[in-house]
Image (cartoon, rainbow, N blue to C red):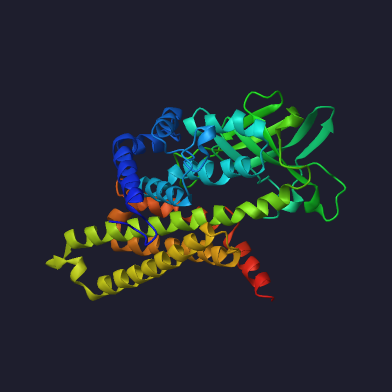
Length: 382
């Protein structure tokens, strides 16, 4: 059965095929990946073989030329397995679209086929130790030197940082630009470039299998041909693409909430206290009803947002609302569901414990929820 009103038969078939693939290739291995703190590159190549990487890319570069609905399905099914698969969505729906939209013909021919096959894994490096949501104040620099840029700086909290082969780095190319955001550019730095090193794999509270790392650039010599788009236009490109990034985060939070509700309903029906299932207690029922209502509201909102986004509408305010509200809701639901699991909810063998750890960061990354509210307030003319 279709999940959304805009899904057609081929979308439903695609979802079934992906779910079957993940049940075989991801679900049985997921616990081990969490222990290893890494998803193996071999899994990426399997995704590529099956057509689950960047299906939106044009056929002439090896893609399937499919619309964003397929990206939605991939993101949702990955999240259903576990939040540590978020790096796949970042590759498919966040980093690769920069190459598609702003890359030269040569860059597309060089990079896109590898991104589709899983041979290349992308990351986007915005955040620095001293600059997160305040992108205009990044300090990583790229100084033009003949047919190269010399890059210096440090990035942190980079999703896919360890596995990545191609990192889209946000750098300052005009150090004197006023306002500051007018001096920002995007440079693709490839693994193995002299002066580019990957730091430690960061030890996070949750998302254990998702490789997040620090990146260092010390007199890193990057070919000028790796500039994505025009020099000093980077900030504009980021603003144009952040709408989709935040929509992807909202979608993942929605699926996490649905998954938590489902597992909690199963648990309270089987767990007994005082001679009856805890699902028979009114408090339990009311809590579950409240969560189910919030989840239905979230899904309806997202459905309309996906349609508007695909129609090319400016839904920055609505996407910001969805991102902050759905991630906050998921955080609240994770606490409620853990409580309903009682002591077992605090045990690692129960999936709710992992969800409880994995959820909070969604309210921080892709622009913190406080930044989302600032954006909305600005657009309301406040």
